[in-house]
Length: 511
Length: 116
Image (cartoon, rainbow over all chains, first blue to last red; front, side):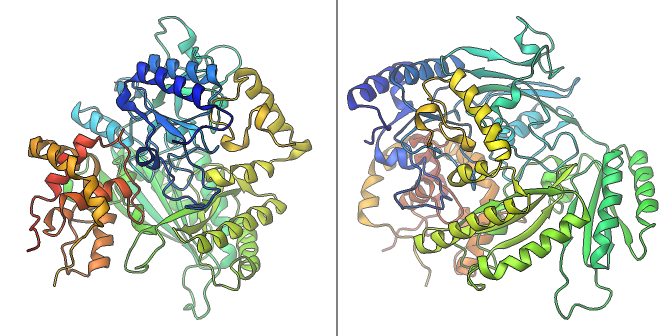
């Protein structure tokens, strides 16, 4: 059995004994085989000394048990790493950022505490997955939709806290933005409820997210200031209809008016669905007139409103010379089983795992390495930024890919967020240390090159969270220093998820 | 000839206790675990990455849908669940307990034909 760093065997045994008393012996894992289940299956350091691994795991099922576990960890200064469902694959999965931490596995806290159809919100625990919440809603015949991200087994709370997003309408697909109220266990074991939840016997915890006074919820997003044990979310009342239009522009520079028009329509909330952008530099030999850019434009709402909004979109895009606008099938909800089987389920509030087909074994890629990580810098939502990033990628590709011998997927321009874009590059990761080392080098190079151009990550794999945090260095890293000051105040022993998103407690900070 | 999913002897030894638990588990228990954890990737039809992956791997020499396989022993099922394979990560005991794994392995391997 491995020991957590800077913890002696006697203290660790005492802590394990206390945890077994609190949560039951079956839910404290110390054997090599059990702890190995917490390895990050997509670790870019798989099998190498730098791989981030746990020393043990403890799995409480109630908030009182979480309090007890945290108090013991605080007493013995044992680092904990909280996970919800542990399915944050490509961003660290169920493995800690700080090797030797004890994983605080919240999967057993899997209760859907409330789904309120009338006011369209839910209150859930961290172990509730999108599949669980969807099943609950379906069984109870409630007329609200889940907003699923790509992997349906992810935690509703965990995805929101990591900065994840989904595929239905705005604002619901910004998962952290759509939350309303939290319950958090601090490092000393104390429970805090945020927003209106701070009122004893609150009647409006999930009705108003701001409450009174300074808003602290942001400290727990990609954070390590506490363990979130409950969270409320706004949900979308089932929309009557959904329709997607396809807009195409032939010229390379058409991306500028195309995105300007799309931005206007989204900022006016005429378009509310999660749009998609495809295209880029036209390959040599492409037929004349072939589309350089394609945008999928989905709209959710009452049928007659959707039809009117589509007409308005058509008028706006018609002002771009040469652009084509094609309306797709209008779907009335709820979909029957046959229709659901031919559409992209997540766009209709039904979670699935089909995304794993993209980077898994498939006819186009019969021998993939298995895992992947992504570099996801935020760029402005303008056509000029897309063209600049495309040039940047092309100009640096030969060098970073070692003469084309390393295969990346990218750049994928994601228009999921209303006000910005993600210009993603994907890196296949497997079990071959030589391949992984080359991919790590390429990842680091893209981060450095992008930062020099003013582009930085919104979310990063555990192994690169320090690297990406360092790119946010304005005024000698003032933001990082502010976070460290808060961390030291609320978690003086530095026991909660040390290093998560580059925030380290005082005793582990490097000069 | 059909390829069989074989196991090293050391792994097979690990699963002796599971076989004993599985004998006591009703088939419905295994089906419930399968429906909760496996069905999203290993069913038939569109959008099943596990099925799609096995179709490419075996090119139809063995069925791509898990429940149609006759070459998966309970021990092989348990191994894949706890070890993971390719894009599929391992499943922790807070997700699938040992007792649930035994029931699942028995359920998925219901058509298993022992090699002579």
